Amino acid sequence: MNIIPKNNPQYRWIILVVFVVSHLVLSIVAYGWGPLAPFLKETMALNRTQIGCIGSTFYFTAALSAFPTGIFVDRQGVKKGLIAWLGLTGAPLLFMSAFKPGFTIFIFMTAIGGFGYGFGNPVCSKGLLMWFDQNTRGTVFGIKQSAATAGAALSGMLMVYLSQKLGPFNALGVIGSVVALIVILSLFYYKDPTSGRNTSGETTTHAREALFSGFGELFVNKPFLYLAIIIGLLGLAQGIVATFLILYASERLGYSLLAAGSLLTIVMLSGVVGRILWGVVSDRLFNGHRKPVLIIISALAVLTVTMLALLGTTACPRGLFMPVIIGLGLSCAGWNSVVLVTVAEISTESKMATSVGLASTIGWLGLAVGPVAFGSITDHFGYIIAWMTLATFCFFSLFFCILLPVTNNAVKR
Image (tube, helix red, strand yellow):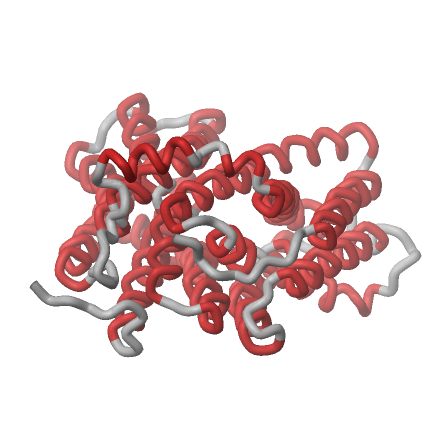
């Protein structure tokens, strides 16, 4: 049997490529339901409510699965989790392409795909923490997380193009085939690092008892609780900006729909830059310490959301609009990598994926709840009050970042 030393300086970059490519392709799936909507509406004769149910079902099951799948990864190992992530997300696409099911079966397959997608953060976080050291983790987490945003940007063009050429079901089949190829490559090229111990971690009775007996630690771990709150608040901000920026720019600021759509693209691209930038800054400028970067991100979110609210009045010069848009992307769409690496670093290795899974569930719930609450506030009180309310929540995120205890970022066995 081949023994691969932990943190092998050459092989670990192959591991990073596996995670980045996997997250990129699966994010095309996760963010592809919107671009597919007009084609599915015509092909399947769906109404708008049914169209809305597709994306909601995918993300709802992803949120529900992130926590239990984190436990699975801690018990069964990263490689099995990686195959489950890819297989459960990709297989429904091939099924839908082959059988072109009706709406009920389509939603059921979407739910299975969402369940599989929930494996992503626990799998990648534990895998990267096992292969990379403290002074490179922030950077590699940023690269991996940027793949999700890049996949979101790519899905808008790719899924529309494939649907126009092949139809929506065959478009799903093409992506499913790519996922199947990645599964085969992962079976051969992904390996857990070995260091003279059982890397799957939870195959013995003693290990299982250790997992569940220590499970309550997550709920009395003050850094984890603070990070959970921060994740929920920043996830809420991300969902609101992604959902309402185009409407706000067109309805309140007078931008055309095309111009408003380009603003959201700038936000997402800034998010890609931010996810890498904040990791590099925390690794190099702050020597692997994450708290200062979390404070900067939350402070930038407070500032930019407040200025976005003021742009709807005469209190803020329009010349500041583009810096505000870029700042929104860097903060509200660029926070994920540093927060996730912090969650992983404060966790024991036996509960690392479980912690990340629970944190991911909280973040996705913020993404789901935020737009609904913001829309309700806007309907009753207008955009200015709604944006200032969001700025207040971002301030609470900053407050908990300041309270966050400093940790040594060492992964505990």
